Length: 358
Ligand code: NDP
Image 1 (cartoon, rainbow, N blue to C red):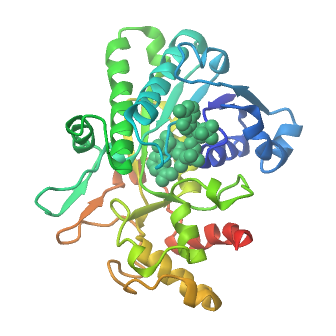
Image 2 (cartoon, rainbow, N blue to C red; image 1 turned 90 degrees about the vertical axis):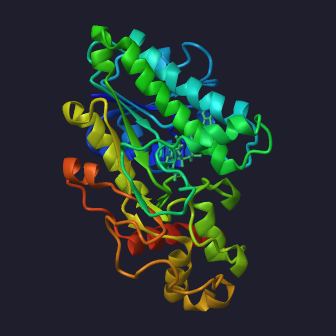
């Protein structure tokens, strides 16, 4: 069977592609330029590429109508991950527009060109489409019932200028996911749509070992960068944020497994959204753990307030702390039976891949 994964050179997509290959799929990976996929073809995918099970299709501009038509032909499943996650981008047209256009584009290509063998289309949405700050600072545990109505409103009120990157990103993920469900609603009468059968995965902050080896740490994806900044000591004590978003984490290998589970269980996951979150893993816990395991690097690693904001060993589904916000990943845990990769393993496996940059 063939699975199409968009943005195959991306952090999550590349690991997801590997998971699919290991499960026996033939992989069609889309990429803005073929050169960006070369490190995978020569590296983590080499044995599968040599066996003729990997094809790269260039999709230079995913916002163009029909951009994915060629790539999706004959696919049994599609996983759409390509979307801007770059906190240096400043405007809605750089972030929100491509996120929506890419998602709508691949849905339409799937509907018109994939063929009747297509059984599932999974989109990487985000917890950013679910969680938002609680204005009154009250405790709350977010579930799949919730929507981030805050970010889009902020973008609108700002008139599109000077928008904090996390707000712009949150608005992009919310709008792109809304577009999936609008598409599903509009096309539900179509028999073809039943085979497109979209579902969304909503991961929290993703850590874990990347499989694309970048020569420069500046090319690491946005969520690994803070781990490198802590490990390399390029941020100071004061810059160590207590939390990123909800302070939760999930390992990229679990995110990949969740995507493949979602395409393999069309009946269970059709039309559903799933929070993908392992537990609490705030930056302070990352700094404390790295300092413990790399004592020789101790003086460089930002100290912050050791032990603050988390309970060591308490990783897994977690309830709202007093005055805090939390996530429930119970829906996916129960449906998939996943046992999450623990925080220590996730962080230390990541750091191992970053040692070469020091
Ligand atoms: P990466 O930056 O590693 O990968 C992003 C991928 O999307 C790359 O292939 C990139 O291509 C592609 N892309 C970005 N912008 C565009 C665009 N305008 N047109 C075409 N392709 C584009 O990020 P991640 O792997 O971390 O993220 C992948 C997905 O997962 C995204 O949808 C993101 O929102 C979502 N996600 C990520 C989380 C995380 O913690 N990392 C958490 C929750 C969701 P190129 O290299 O050419 O720029």
